[in-house]
Amino acid sequence: MTAAIPAAEKGPLALICGGGSLPLTVADLAAKRGEKVVLFPLHGAANPRDFENRPHQWLHIGQIGRFVRLARAAGCNDVVLIGSVVRPAFWQLRLDLRTVIALPRIALGFRGGDNHLLSFIGRLLEGYGFRMIGAHEVAPEILVPQGSLGHLQPTERDRADIHLGLDYLRAAGPFDIGQAVVVANKRVLAVEAAEGTDAMLARVAEMRASGRVRTPVGTGVVIKAPKPGQDLRFDMPSIGPKTVEGTARAGLAGVAVLAGSTIAAEPAELVKAADRAKIFVSGESGGTAR
Amino acid sequence: MTAAIPAAEKGPLALICGGGSLPLTVADLAAKRGEKVVLFPLHGAANPRDFENRPHQWLHIGQIGRFVRLARAAGCNDVVLIGSVVRPAFWQLRLDLRTVIALPRIALGFRGGDNHLLSFIGRLLEGYGFRMIGAHEVAPEILVPQGSLGHLQPTERDRADIHLGLDYLRAAGPFDIGQAVVVANKRVLAVEAAEGTDAMLARVAEMRASGRVRTPVGTGVVIKAPKPGQDLRFDMPSIGPKTVEGTARAGLAGVAVLAGSTIAAEPAELVKAADRAKIFVSGESGGTAR
Picture 1 (cartoon, chains in turn brown, orange):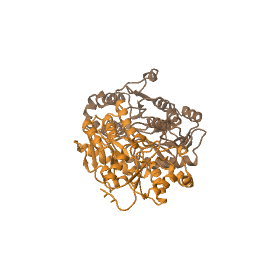
Picture 2: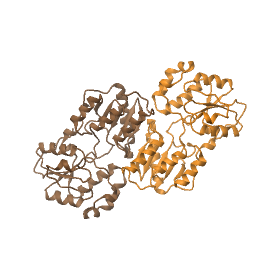
Picture 3: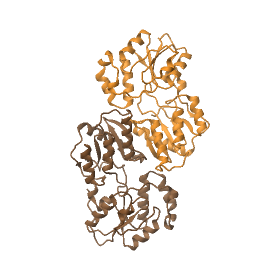
């Protein structure tokens, strides 16, 4: 577990907020720890209603100059990127002058996988003198701990599927593919690439409905882990109630993630959903090995 | 290229026929070469109309005893398994006595990937004294040759995607996953597991429609190759006009397969469909390296 950074005389924390409830959770946890937080919700990703009662400054994706100016004016040194952002089309970017200057480098960032894009933006901001830190460093409470989150535990058969899944993710890591795989009775049923975990789980549900997958309901695990070398400050695997619901619909036994390297969004709802659906959610050790 | 087995004094060839037109093509090519062929279409897979004017004996999947009896009575020694078969549910098997005796071993075959099931059935028939041979050994014309099948050739950028795809398939091979992957601009967009190549291509089309995939139309390649150690006598990757149509709908530039290790079903229609859709179909060298 990473220790939280103590609030010293450093300036307030700049929180660039994508979609979902996680940015606000992180903001609240950091505030509870005594941090001053400045919110920068992203147009098209963050929900305007969430920010109605909190001071904030909107950003378009691509407005690097605006962010640099506002964050410096607020005295920010540390920056956290948190929440979901759908990779925008290049022509959808609202570019300001600083961004245009960085364009050739940004185009490079756009060519690789999502992993490259996010860590690229982080490195770009570092070039302007900011310190990029992971959301889990200011709010370690958001990480999945080791062990089972709800009432259920993986069986021996689930354990075998989990190990095969982690082995596969390790082998596929160098290809900057997705972060998740579904394994049932030691057979790989689905591999995540650009479609995302929810779409992969929906596919398993469809394959079961069509008879293409015939392992009994309650067999199989979705395994999620960061890619080797993935910069967890910018792109941490995450699970939430939606993951649990997708897992149940896919007829699987549970969800396994790497403890300490995975964010649990809405952890209370996640545990409730897991126990209701009789799905295990397990934090596996072995995070450092990856 | 594998040389065809000459028709000697060995008995007729037993052809166990799954779905699609390929079994009949193989039967005709083998007959042209002077082989006597006995057809065993599989219920639920082969189309009854295709066999109306040809002598044949229907089999249910699981009727190993019936097959052994009929094939021996016909004097068959060599057996070819060809055509598509959807993995049946265990309880759907019509089991006869010989199959029941083999049950514990069959259950083992059902536990692994499709690869295991097919080569397992082959090994089981070998145990009854038959010689299992690949369809490409009696009809090498069905294999994709090296080079482009239609008018178009892969570009340098396509070549880079093809190499990345082949590298990924090699790395994922030990996990008995699918045989195909989609790569565009060196980014892995989709990985095939239990859903099959057509479903994977449909997914890429959907991701493009929803804006999740934003590479320009005409960028990217679907790469298909056997798994390392895959027994090509029982399970050879194959492409057909449907693959080309799916590739076009997915907005990709073309299809790349390993020359000499991939079956082209309906090759004339495949080339016509490729040229019409402006899709390349390329047989790559390097089959032995896998």
